[in-house]
Length: 381
Image 1 (cartoon, rainbow, N blue to C red):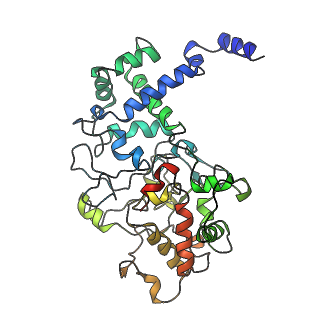
Image 2: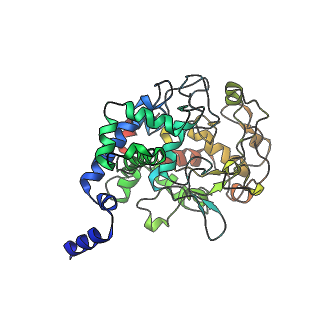
Image 3: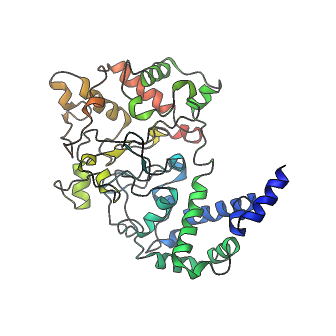
């Protein structure tokens, strides 16, 4: 039966479409994507690769440091500084394409504002970003590809001798190769202590067990309103995000704004910055990030304003604490800071849980540390 299906597909589909079902083609595509991912020659000054901001050895985050630590990445010129924290690429391949669901909510897409609908769009965007890899055009990137010692042969072997005749097609093929790498199990291994617990291979500590109970139970916290995709009974492969967009009253990262020159009066409108969105009610909303490897992805929030995971839990807890203490970050002794965008804050979600005591705050952190992929466990701070 399988041979008949293959024969029918051969008759119906063009040769290129058939090639995509060939395991050898897929392996060559991933091999090319790997080479592209680590190649610095596709940035303007040949100093930066995809891996510079998404280091596989560090949970696909940027650990190079900058004038504001890891809150934002330095560009190809080693001077330009972004305004947002580089999201991890771990598990990014499982993000749904940017769309509106049946309730009218925006869901999915790549980057903090979903501006690229899919993984290929994400893979291609940094090359042309003026504060990232800083290439002037797709044509300039494709020219660099052709100047490379290996890429021309690999491209022609996969897509034919005329692959470089159309710049847009060649550029798209480049992004497809990088995306093919990002879709491999290496980026999404599902082998954390939590996954091993689900398979009966790990026994949680008492603190982790408490944190797990707190996290998944709406009676105790509101974490799962944004960070749970599946019912707990079906939680194998849980991605710990619903991929929706919320304004959670995140304050400005003043140090970052001073360092990148935008200044404290600049406003990041989040989802409203997405060219596909023109609804003012979306201002200040950012995509809910996955919590997988969250212990490795400091600093936190879209602008890297909070330095560690416990601070984030305390920030959310402040919305349910009463009294003057709620306004002070206990880690710094300073006020938390006003929300950057005061409109559209999801107060209902933020204020829907009981206040947590010290033991429960630390238990939640212990549970989230369980979500670290096995190969990073020894690196956790």
